[in-house]
Structure formats: C-alpha cells, structure tokens
Figure: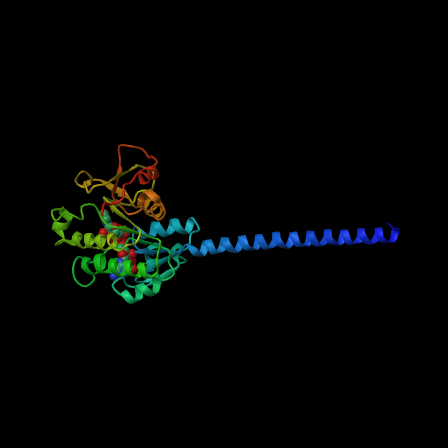
Length: 276
Ligand SMILES: NC(=O)c1ccc[n+]([C@@H]2O[C@H](COP(=O)([O-])OP(=O)(O)OC[C@H]3O[C@@H](n4cnc5c(N)ncnc54)[C@H](OP(=O)(O)O)[C@@H]3O)[C@@H](O)[C@H]2O)c1
C-alpha cells in the first residue's frame, strides 16, 4: 500500500471513529432525554385529588403530600376560608373550589386525577348540607367523577359502626351514619379499585405516639371508646392509595394507647379484600 493510500485509510478510519463517537453521544443524549421525559411523564401520571382537603383530617393529608413532593389537587368550598383556618403555609396547596353536591363541577375538577382521597364530612346535621347530600350524595358524585376520569384507586374515609342503626352516634343524629354506609356501598359497587377506612374518634395527636391497630369484619364495638390520631390516619390514607393489601378492602382503625408505635404498614399488607 502506498503512503498516500495509508494516509487516506487512517483519515477515513478516524472520520468513522469520530462519527461513531458522535452517534453514540447523540444516542446516549437521546436516551437521557427520553428518560427525563418519561420521568416527568411519570410525575404527571400521578395526580391525587383530595376531597375535604380543608378539613381537620384533610389538612394533614395535603401537608404530607406536599412534603413528599407528590402532585395533588385540594378541594374546598372556599379557598379563602381554608387559608384563614390553617394559616398562610396553606396558601399554595393547589386549591380548587367546588361543592361535592354539584355533580357537573365534580366531573370537571376530578378530570385528570389518577387517585382520589375523600375525607369529606357534612358540617351540618340535617338539611341540604347534611349527611344525606354530602356524605352520600357527595360521595356518589365523586365516585362517578372518578369513574369518568378512570382513576386508579379511590380511598374513602367513613367511620366505625356505619352499619349499625344502634350506634350511639347514629341514634344521636337521626341516622347520619347510614348515609356514610350508603356512600361506602356505592363505592364498593362502582367497579373502581378502592379502600374504605373506618376510624374511631379522631383527635389531633402527632403521628407515631401510639400503636395503630386495624380490624376487619365490622367488629367496631370494642373500638367505641378508642381514639385515632388524625396525623396517623393521614399516613394510612396515603399509603392505602397504592398498597396492594388495601385494595378493595374495608377496615376499622384506632390507636392503642397501651402500646408504642409499630409497623402499621404490615397491617395493611395483611388485609383481606371484601367479599362480593
Ligand atoms: N370527628 C370524629 O371523631 C370522627 C370519627 C370518625 C369519622 N369521622 C369522619 O371523618 C371525616 C373527616 O373529619 P374531619 O374532622 O376532617 O371533618 P371536618 O374538619 O369537619 O372537615 C370536613 C371537610 O368536608 C368538606 N365539606 C363539607 N361539606 C362539603 C361540601 N358540600 N362540598 C365540599 N366539601 C365539603 C369541608 O370543606 P370546607 O372546609 O370547604 O367546608 C371540609 O374539608 C368526617 O367525615 C367524619 O364523619 C370523624
């Protein structure tokens, strides 16, 4: 081979090398770009709709979601009142205003959500803003909106003893709990993936001070005098969004003051799904 030809080969070779390196960089860069895009799509893919976000349980839920950096949308009837109630740190909580009794509005604002946590509770004992229209009608509207939005999972907060007309609270409120049970039934029969959480009396105690106990089978009487920290509850509600054990399960929950904190996630893992 002549020197001239050798030089040509070497220069061709290095050209190819440079080209290959360039292509490799472009491909890697492309992959990284694609991975980044997929990451941000994964983030967009989760959007947790929190109904009752402005309430005493809801505030813990959205605080935790914010601290965990998870995308969420917070429902309230009045953003101004919610901020006034919980302070300025609640200003940037992705508020949307709406009334759960308004089905068209629920369809509109649940659209785009991938999961729902409902901790709504009627503030009035009777009348058009009472349990029948909020704890039942409102839950029906949210469930229907969630179905239309094809959400992956719906977590509903109700209360221990909702099945029993003899429950003292039911007796004292002309059957307010029966509407909660009807709301539960609507969700159970909706075809959505769900978790129904029935707490004992709620208190504002920091999470992790007392053991969380979970029961199934509607055996609520032993829990009648028990309490549950709203902060503990908020963790369980969020965990229930994606815990396989909590899928299509209903459970009662309380704190046991005689025991220190334990690993309550294991209790969720061991839950049994509801029998159809
Ligand atoms: N207290 C207990 O000991 C206990 C025990 C067991 C179960 N629970 C259940 O736990 C749930 C939550 O308790 P909580 O202490 O957080 O209640 P809460 O402080 O009274 O909060 C109620 C939430 O429901 C919302 N809401 C009421 N009517 C609405 C409507 N028409 N449209 C949209 N949102 C509406 C409120 O929104 P606005 O702020 O915008 O009005 C608020 O965010 C209640 O359902 C209760 O039944 C309570």
